[in-house]
Image (cartoon, rainbow, N blue to C red; front, top):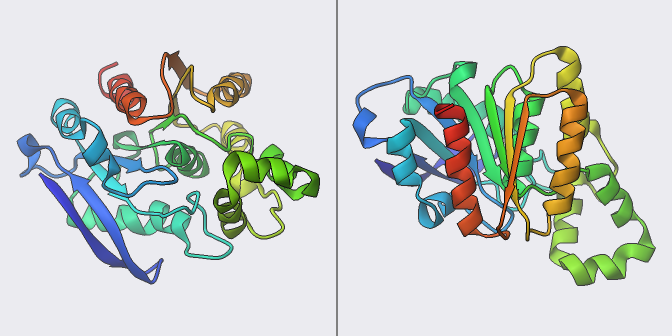
Amino acid sequence: MILKGSFYSQTLEMETGLSVLVPNSSLTRGNHSVVYLLHGLCGRNEDWIHYSMLPVYAERFDCVFIMPEVARSFYTDMAYGQHFFRYITQELPAVCASVFQVSSRREETYVMGTSMGGYGALKCALTYPETYGGCAAFSSPCLFLKEGLDAQRDPANRPYLEKTYGCQLLNDFEAAFGPDLTWKPEHDILALAAAAAQQGTTPRIYAACGTQDPMYQENKRFEGEMKRLGLDFSFEVWDGEHNWTFFNSALEKALGYFFEP
């Protein structure tokens, strides 16, 4: 069953889009394993339904997929905008447990995403490792956020950054992280990973990136940092670009990693 619609979020103080996919074989059964599946920078909540084999995966892996809408927020409580991170990690799970009868058990709760959604998935899982048993991130950016923010604050870098990434993306960063682009540990994946490792509660993490993806070198470097911290981290690479052909394959591999070990 595929549901597409919207509801009023108390956290966002507005209507927000939501897509839900429940396997047809399990419609009458509650306490499903749940995957919160996050979209990328230019995407919407319906993307995974439109551009991947998600209905097939739902039946094969017998889990519910929850796909929220967060615009270009980088899954943050924005400096200028809505509190999307609080919505994703607090309000949305409570709503879904009540309405769709998904499990709230850590070992049956996963968060996954691609591109900006991969950053968001890592941020959710490492901020609340007691909530998520598994996390998957595909072709993720912003893995070394401090370096990126430092580069943007330097006026000498502005022409290159505007030419390479466009003015809109730079404006998105200021809206999400603030006009001064100050580094804060709650937004930084490495800082969150180190804190989770120190606490001793960490989710299993699967990451993947295509060898032709612009994020490839950043993700390879990230692999080394995760291993240095001693996290339960699996990283796969194969021939692929930053597109839905790769994202679809990566999602299938991630689901197999968690549900068919």
